[in-house]
Length: 139
Ligand code: IDP
Ligand code: MG
Image (cartoon, rainbow, N blue to C red; front, top):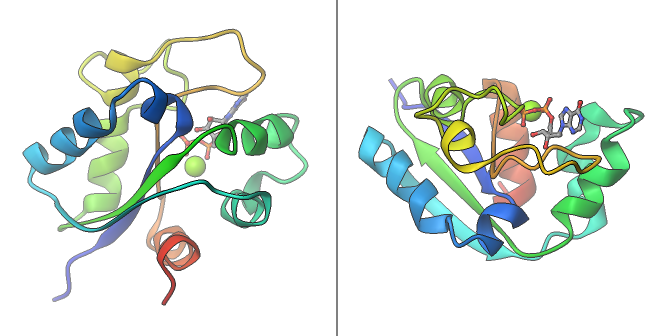
């Protein structure tokens, strides 16, 4: 049985607030294994691919611009049910209501911006994880 993989991003707000280590610590303390890691400046083409499911939504352009606004950290974490497990560690999308104890609930809040700034991204299904890992790390 092969263990599951997920793509995690520390978004530009997390990097600029020096929360890379905090995010990594939460992933590792939970028991998942980080098997790939890179810091990068994402370009528009990569982000439009990554967020293609949101094309046409009002927050799509602000989202792409926000994600290009500074460096991000991409990583692959592995472990049984890591996709679900990291989504649980991250908390819900809106940081105002994300549960305390989660990354978004503890470390983010509404900044009044067009796009929700919420520190991290995590894949939401095995299909998305495979697609997103290929975008950031290749085959
Ligand atoms: P997720 O990151 O929790 O999976 P998605 O619905 O996939 O949430 O949305 C991707 C990202 O787009 C979110 O993390 C957030 O930064 C932003 N976003 C999602 N919904 C909204 C919205 O309604 N308004 C503004 N920004 C949003
Ligand atoms: Mg999503």
